[in-house]
Length: 559
Ligand SMILES: [Ca+2]
Ligand SMILES: [Ca+2]
Image (cartoon, rainbow, N blue to C red; front, side):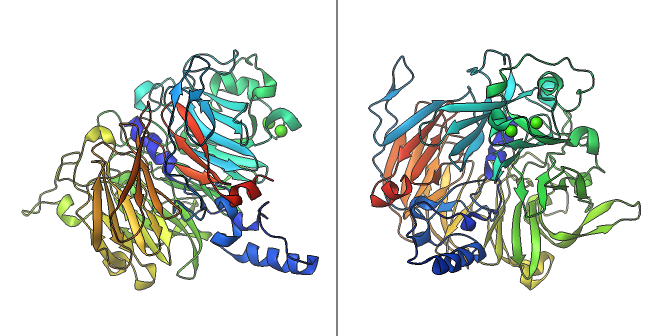
């Protein structure tokens, strides 16, 4: 279960104003007036046009941007890169196209993000980087983008609950989303933490100043914990923190997973609220499964009150998406633990009867086919059986005004029936909004990639499908012959996907099926490959590989 959660975290991200970043390699307009115009145009665009983003631009969050559509406009992807052989110094000898490789912990589920020269990953503490941090911990590591040099880490103590809410050695499953000086991440303790990406190098930013106490008790025990002796130069700088367990009473099942998404004002986060060890009882049915926090202060702004908590099948591990304009409305998109995908208003909230500020539900669509919920006699089909119902763990993707959402379960529950649902919120609510549903797929915790009208989606059973985004028609499928936890990346006309056997498959994107290469690694791949600034990052359970992409464009990016 925990592993799946981690996987989920990797999946979710947000839409940043990537476009606002002036890419180092972009051609400068001839005069400054034109430059300003160009900048204004860039800021208005939801994502950079391929020609405007040599090297593909940055990858500042799970999903690259808030649409959660994991594709990159980069070109020059080599298809003959290799993993090499580790020598005693920890170098991957003979690895083709490798810039650097960094050792992480023994398990790493927090898919890499890259912004402003830094790379962030989530892992555990089984290969300790700091003498002052020992034993099992949730860890965020920050590396230098060019060299892979370790800069600092965020060390999170484990909850005493163990497997029930904070499974041993799972580490931090969430990806860091970076917005300017700040990064936002969900910890293994069920906390949302705002970090200063510059760490302590520019002093201890606040209001939060109790980093030494946090290291011994998290937010929950700040008042009673003894301050730890820390190597402050390499310690993360916490700006603010929000403890979802103590503030909301949520009960994370096995682990807190998923990544947050941000708008200009808010942080939107799923709470990992779930069932208890019995797998039947829901300890906190009235607690929210999705919340909004003020980005500046970390204060609670709104909570979900659509009744998801009472209908949780297992947990809420999906990372939400955000669209500034979906059917004319700023919308948070949430794949929930009851199998429904929800659209909530992202800027207007309402007060309920008890005085709580809650999300305004715009629409909801059941993404779990009815025949998975009840049998032909109308009897409920048992959860966690092959033909039974599933919740949503992967991230819903927004593409050309539609939402693509997939159902699945914790990989510990094994394989089973799944579905991809295409939702058009302009067509109404519920079944009216369903454009098509594809049911040939098995359960999945992978997030789809959608490029040029093609949907690429893998399932836990190991298959990768190419579907028509408008009709759901299947063009081809490929069996990787191993379980899949991670998600696809589409870049430079290719689809990349890692599996549990440590194989990264490379297929041709488009209607015609073509295998290009399979690259072997010495450890399983549970995270999703990403591309940022002309570099391909492949994350196994133990190592992060950074590969240089080819061509002049890469050189331009590295100026
Ligand atoms: Ca600082
Ligand atoms: Ca601080």
